[in-house]
Figure 1 (tube, rainbow over the protein chains, first blue to last red):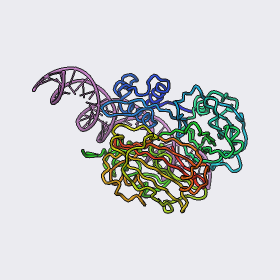
Figure 2 (figure 1 turned 30 degrees about the horizontal axis):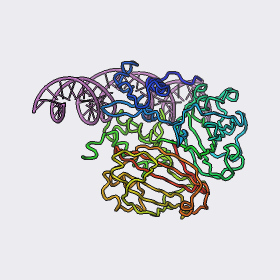
Figure 3 (figure 1 turned 90 degrees about the vertical axis):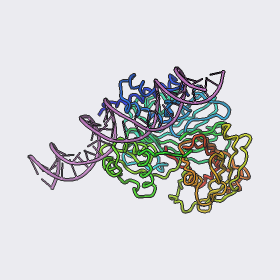
Figure 4 (figure 1 turned 180 degrees about the vertical axis):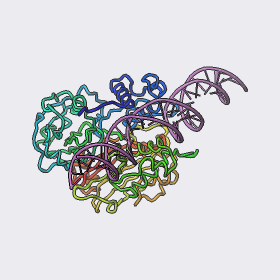
Length: 238
Length: 238
DNA sequence: TCATTTAACTTGTAATTACAAGTAAAAAAT
DNA sequence: ATTTTTTACTTGTAATTACAAGTTAAATGA
């Protein structure tokens, strides 16, 4: 079974423009080519172009202004609440490092998992991994991830050091995040969490439990994330 | 200047369906009338109906399935991260009470405000209020709100006890939330916060700083929210 | 009876046309 | 020179048509 037969035109243009925005071809505040120009450039009609732009706007990559145009709005932002916004200065990706605590391994799901699982998920077991992410060599996230072992061949062999989990899923398996839900709490740091995040025991830590939906029906990503919010806040747009 | 001259058809249908979903006319899991049926019912063409449904889907009220239909998906959810999801049982609105700590009053903006303000906002001053919201008589939120004093006549005279701030803005001033941003941290409770949320000093507390955008350009709602996440988590979808 | 095929739905994609409404810069008038 | 008007753009709204693709249940076959 092939993953995608034909890509719709509006999707194709969406991906082109999104990539251009992320790669900096169009920068924050820039005006995108007008709808009619895009029609000519990519040989589509306006409704098709508008569908692409509409999706881009919904995803927060651009803002549309009647009579003016589409303005790039590529704020610091990932899925839901993810990005880290430093209170002192803006943070580029260059200072972000990832340390693997537990390499990806196949195992059964924990007995009392934080989310309810489908039978299919339960049967197939999960890919488990633990990572700590550092910003300027300060540990910010302690990340425990669970993915159902569904249609992800050889994933435990991939290199997770530099690339993000999302990027790997996207590049190798064409898995895209389409939405999700999360629960957030403030909890006192346990000894283990305190050690990993270089905080004292009982220091306030942000705890997120997340379930991410993908374009692959039935495939979800689960993660339990502990955040050191001493210096940085969790930033989110909606 | 009137707030709205003519409402587009797709917007009108969107509002109708959204209201029906929220009022329970269409319940969770229900199948909405098909696009062609909606065309007939409301005298529109399919592109117009599809635009309404597309917006509803983007806002999370429905999910569309090719060949099947649009399924209502009105999960517990407000704007961004707001809803409270009890770990023990689902929480209805009936147990939610609001206690006013500081009644709405007009005052200048704080000197070192958490977000940067426009000149217009700075000149007009802000409407300030403090509230504590209780769930089953347990204080959950300590909410400090700031709104620019722009086109909101007599707002300080309104009753804020039962109704939410959002509801008042919507009903009386036609102000709708269109998006926003927020920063989240885990912090130790101060003495004041501990007192209001019935927690010991230094107990972990969730702190959210939020800026909400509205359909009224230039009008933003700001709030600083402290949450007791002992028994309840903050739940969010995206 | 059971499995397969067909038909009748559903939403998805896409081109075409027309006009409305907002924006900004050029042109004209003062 | 400054203000006003016009013009040429931009996106927004909306109807129309056609076919593709996924879903479901009825009809048909063995």
